[in-house]
Amino acid sequence: MTLWARPSTALEATLFVSGASPSELWGGGVGGALSLGLFDVAAVEIEGAHQSVTGGDGGVLTLSGRAFLAPSIGRLVPYVGLSAGVRRQTAVSESDWGTTSGVFVGLKLKLPLGLRLRAEYQWVHLPTDALIAMDNRYYGGVGLAF
Image 1 (cartoon, one colour):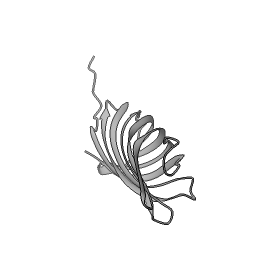
Image 2 (image 1 turned 120 degrees about the vertical axis):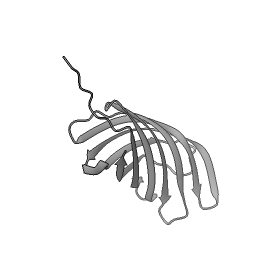
Image 3 (image 1 turned 90 degrees about the vertical axis):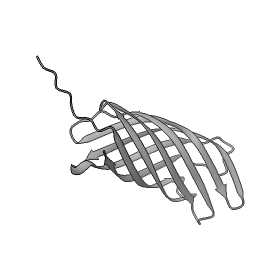
Image 4 (image 1 turned 30 degrees about the horizontal axis):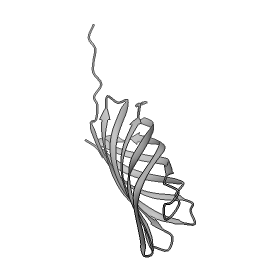
């Protein structure tokens, strides 16, 4: 009996646009991620993002390490994971450095030529003394697997 290994894509780069809640405080955001897949079951990722505040006088810049389960089901890849990282938050003339953590769920759609569509919802934890509260972040993105 011969066992055939499934082809696996090791790296994936994603660019995304995001929103956050409470929506009266947060404007739009942008970011990117670089993922390393592990046997089509899990992945680790580094993600950088900037979320602006409503009115444009501040925002939050985050850099997070993330680990998640991501089993492939045909062209669909549902995933769930944990994140932890650092942040720099600014509001008008104040700034604050600190940590961030969270839990997230998402779905990827594999398209031809290594293209990926991705949607994600994150439950964000910022310390209670953060300049601006953030409960959730959500995004849609496009990626390339190679």
